[in-house]
Amino acid sequence: MDSNYTVLARKYRSQDFESLIGQDVLVKTLTTAINTGRIAHAYIFTGIRGTGKTSTARILAKALNCLSSDGPTAKPCGVCENCRAIAAGQHIDVMEIDAASHTGVDNMRDILDAAQYRPTNGRYKVYIIDEVHMLSTSAFNALLKTLEEPPEHVVFILATTEIRKVPVTILSRCQRFDLVRVPVETLKKHFAWIASQENIELTDGANELLARAADGSVRDGLSLLDQAIAQTGGHVDEKSVLEMLKRADRGVVVSFMETVLSGDVSAALARVDEIYNNGADLSMLLSDMMEWTHWATRMHPAIRAGNIDAVPYTADQREQIQKINSRVSLNTLSRIWQVMVAAVPEMQASGNQKQCFDMLIIRLMHIAEMPSIPEILEQQKSNSNTNTVAQPSATNNTGNTQKIAIENANDLANALQSSKEILLYSYYTSNIEITEISNGIIKYFDRRGDADFAHKLANWLENKTGHAWQLQRQTESSNTHTITEQKKEELQSDPLVASAMDLFADAEIVGIK
Image 1 (cartoon, one colour):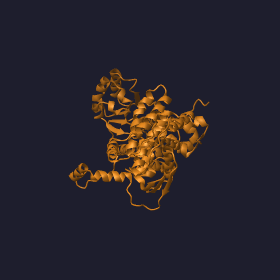
Image 2 (cartoon, one colour):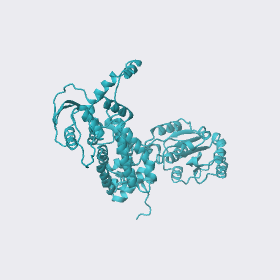
Image 3 (spheres, rainbow, N blue to C red):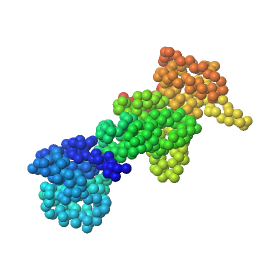
Image 4 (cartoon, rainbow, N blue to C red):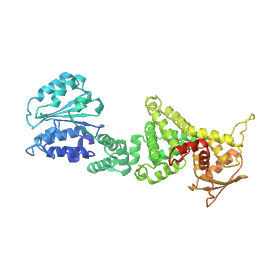
């Protein structure tokens, strides 16, 4: 093993402003300030780990002390004595201080006493205080006066991941820069370039997974890339990265969410067992499920928030999500999201993640199927106005299952809802015009043209009624209302609703839930 090996995160650390990726606003502001001579006496850089706070501080220190020009330069040469010493962390006038191990007021007094002396080899004395939020209250108070009016040869650069823990009195004395998460596409280009420099084969699918797992942190992404190279020996593909991250493929997640929304608990738990036995991390699976729910909600036809092509799924996966969305309401997606958010701390605290995840899936499926309060009220109203209501399957005293009777469109809707067939119920009530129901034959018009609807409904009807049904799809609409449209008309005819509508100009009923 080469004892001199340098990890990628250190080897490819940004050495000048041009190589600092993903922080365009910061780079532009600092380079302009240096070129115009408007150099502040104190800066504070904040952002998540691995976005370039300490690297930017070192680059700024080089810019102030580079010997390639007569004054500060926005393009430090990187080869002069000062630049090389700063990059190695050995420059006598550039002091990097870890606030976590220098928290006391005595440490701060020593720093401030030394700041009064002029620099030895450079133009400026630069104090880089990393994780500055770790300083004690007394140390912060000792820093205040010098930070506001330091000697002209001193520049303070503070860095922190916890900006809210830094006193306002400190923030008011510094120029603040927020380093943003580096976009996925920028990370992919950077990783691909590094792979080419290292003569490593990095597939696009693997690069995508690494960039997303990095969560906006360059250092995290490079550490993962380093690990993947060590694991594979130089050929990094999607399969090896998935195995390393213990993460399920997005296609698996989309298919799994479709199973969850089908209402079949046993099938969903069987899929959990399969995914778990294949080595997937259930915490990562929960994170992927939350990602799916977020994008499915944004893609839902009820809101259509943003460009669908920007959704991080393949064209086939997006089509599959849209198909699911045609049968699932926003109300259902919102409930699923709430259950999963609540499950995150449960998963972290659980001693047995598999048991916790199984219970999450069971809870998630039952809560998703629960009707909303408006649906319950509307169901009660429908029940009171309907003489014959289809009853759900029940067991009589002899242990045999009683079969339901379907005589009209409302019977079918009520039976689907009572059986918790949420996907069929949603699609049926929103898109199907019933022309005729009689003697085991249903004539209908499908406004959306789902090829699977007839097959699924026929199987369900045969199971619930005890005999086969024929579903005859009409080629033209008979202009019959769907169940949802019927409910809307009933609401509009209600005196209370009509009075409410009159109170607001141009008011209309846009949906019934």
